[in-house]
Image 1: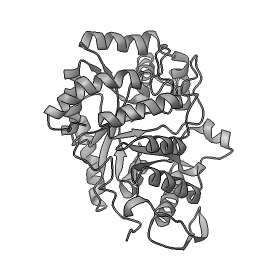
Image 2: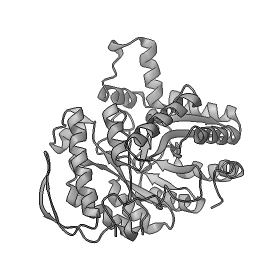
Image 3: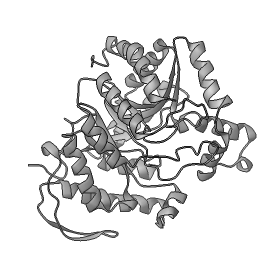
Image 4: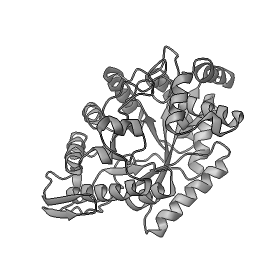
Length: 376
């Protein structure tokens, strides 16, 4: 029988023979995660997402992870202005694929837990156990204003999220009926059938960056997304070790993932030239500045050098780790990240469908030879 704490360790993307898990991040949004005006930037349309998911499934990619976005960032491109809702997106992609895990990114304060639990179980049955939950507590104020929902003070957001995920896990457990009387959520005679597919619950992940957010993740989640260091692999290894140690203090094991933005071309010179073209020459700087303003990063509050560094940071993949080079360099970077303790990486590309075939042909075989991946 399933319990509220039943382990999803045999589920993708945590299961499988790949020592380094690879995913695609942000394909449900127009422009993906690259704040660029180049005409070949990612469309985010359903037809392109469907085509990409089938390509990823055939290539042996482990998962697709969407961004929970409700409102674009403006600029010349209205960066991420056209988005597909993530649970219904996942349902469609799970039906069209065979092995690929697909996540829904769910804002806990915007989705009632009973409705969310039922939606996710439906997706899980469609995918026969391949659905995963990326829980988001919320930070984007103008999106919450659009819903008429007031954000709580930072720590209280996670206290609410704790009750929300507790309810979700109870609904997914073998409990037939229960009451819930929390500080924020009060429910009577809750029932939820069917249960998740196959007797274990979906994989749960979170990317809380603050100490409170990380503590929430290590208590409740199977996977934690953290930012890899842009300084050194050694610093990334230290960050991974800290997360794992915090989880161990709670008697738990947690997988650690990161996000990256890959620019891979036959030569490093070609990769660097295309990177400069997309994120400097053709960056949507007005959208970048809107991104910074939402995060309260303002030119008048720091040096001109630091502000420009922040602009470049967000122009390239909206804070993902840049991986720029030829196939040897890209593969070597991914191998080093795995050796630093990372379970996997969710990557973004300027155009997912155009660039994935080259990664499949040139980078994945190098990872296979290194013993980190097995052929699709």
